[in-house]
Amino acid sequence: MTGFRNAPSAPPSTPPPVGTRMIGFFLLGGTMWIAGLFALFRAVMAVAAP
Image 1 (cartoon, rainbow, N blue to C red):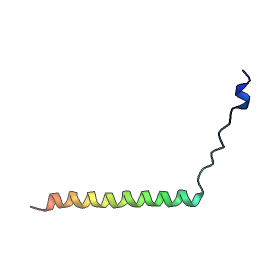
Image 2 (spheres, helix red, strand yellow; image 1 turned 45 degrees about the vertical axis):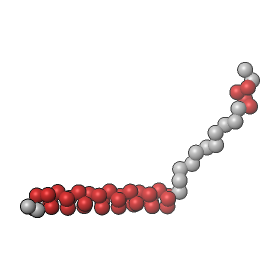
Image 3 (cartoon, rainbow, N blue to C red; image 1 turned 135 degrees about the vertical axis):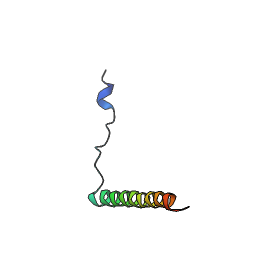
Image 4 (tube, one colour; image 1 turned 30 degrees about the vertical axis):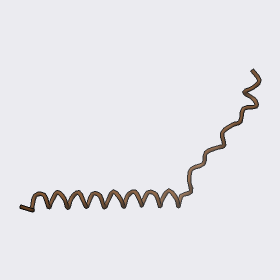
């Protein structure tokens, strides 16, 4: 079984740059923050509105 020596190896996976990870984190965090505020507003309006 000498075929395994010639098999192509996968390139080493490197994590994305720090800037890209920070932008993604803040985008996701901002989206979840807005969704939380919207859910809180809906809960208050469901109780307060007749």
